[in-house]
Length: 370
Image (cartoon, rainbow, N blue to C red; front, top):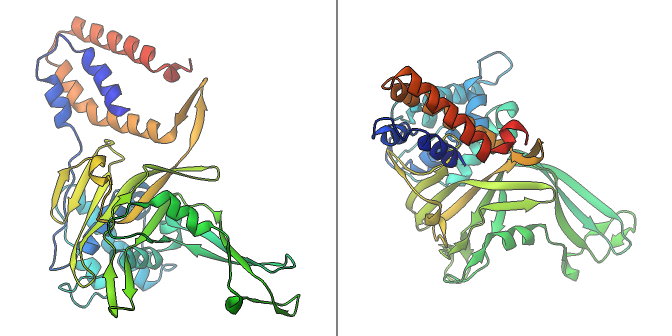
C-alpha cells in the first residue's frame, strides 16, 4: 500500500529531474546487523525480531531503571536498550546481553526459541505484555463436570507430525493444538465430584489473545529407535495470515534454522513495519528478501504474527497497520521530496502539490472519508 502511495507521488513529478524516483528509493530504511561472537546466531536472530517489533522497541526505548525493577531484569533491559540505540545507526554487538543472560560459552549454539522465551520472561511484564496471552487447559468428565487450569503463554508449540518430504500445514497444526481429544482409559482423570476416574475429554482454549502471536514449530524430537534427537526438515505451508475467533494476525517475522540438532545456523526473515519490505537478517549481513522465500520452507522454526485491527474511516474499512505504513512512508519521503522540489521553480512546486492532492484523494477516498 505504501508503494502505491509513493507511485501516486511519482506520477505528479513528471517534470522534475529524471533521477527523482531513484532519490526516493534511496530513502528506503537501512538496517544494521549483529556481530556473531562465535555461535551466537540464535541470539542475533531473536534480538533482530524483537528490534523489528515496534511495540517491544518502544517499550525498551522508554524504559528507565528504578528501584521497582529487579537487578536481573533491569540490567538486561539496559543492555537491550543500548543495543537498540546502536542498531539505529551502525552494526551492533551482543556482548553485554550474553553477560546479562549468563551465557557461559559464545561458541556453543543454543536454541533460539529457548532464548526468545528467556529474554521475554526476564524483562518486566509491561515490556513483554504484547507477546503474552492466556491459555485455558480444560478437561471434562463423562458427567459434564469441567475443570480448567489457566496459564500465561509466550509461544504456542505446534507438533510437526509430517514425513520428511511431506508438506506440513501450519494452519492445520494450529487447529490440532486446540482440538478436543478423548483420553485412553489408562489416562482417564480423577473427577472430584464423581469421586472416581471417568471418561475424559481434554482441550485448550485461548482466553486472552496476544498482540504478537508466536508459533514454535517443533521440528526437533527424540527418536527412540535411534535413541537420539532428530530434526524434521519437512517443507512448511506457512500462511501469511491467521484467524483465531475474532482476531486476525499477519505474518511479519520468521526465524530459520539450517543444520541438525547438535549444530547449524540461524537467521531471520522479517517484514519491516517502516517500509513494508522483507529483509534477511543474517548476523552482520542484512539484505533485501522476499516473502516468496518462505514458500514450502524447510528451515522455518519460529513464526511471529502481529494482530491487525479493522476500523471504519468514512465508509471504507481501513487497517491501523495501513495507516502506520502510510505515515512511515510519507515521513521517510519528506527529506527527499524537499530536495526534489527545491530544484524547480515556485510555480511548478504549486502545480506539483495540487496535482498530488488531486490524485491522492481520487485514488484513496478514505483520506477524505468518501
